[in-house]
Image 1: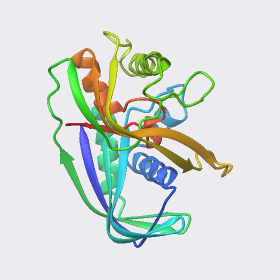
Image 2: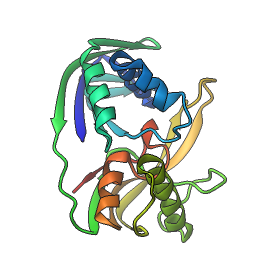
Image 3: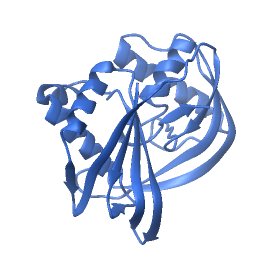
Image 4: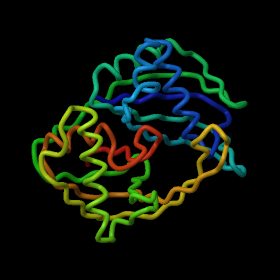
Length: 233
């Protein structure tokens, strides 16, 4: 399932990911606080969603977008319960404030999911793809270890979500990808972290059921923090 959320704001931070995570958390609390605690304060390691953000019409002044149009969030999840709570919650939030920024909800629309019934699919990133090794160092699509690490994290998130992992190994082919370095304050201590990801177009070969779930759950690491959101081309 996919939703598109359109927001009005005059100012929007360049390091926006934790702001959007906070908005998602607030929406879940508004809908069902018990469900919020289930996925954020229990042993459930993987949050079943991914999101990508784009700013339509802006001028960038240092670390702040001055928005002339709107901010759009594309959020996807293979879990109907998550999407139900997020939708109900976001519809109950007219205005959201975060560290001096104000977001006002304009429109929420459901988007259709393209049918995935084949084992080879082209994807486009909606947020940078992040793959890391066991030491949290970035792994690049052209390195031999990329396939191993991508299969590792994909198997782990599928196991956590549905009780079993990959039905067959994934094969990744970069088509038109560009390296990007992202600065974010992921943790509460406001320490700035740097992440090396890739955005653009790639092909993924695997079992259609795996590809369908991953297309919504997100691909790679930190999908619930604004990385690895994709759409089918």
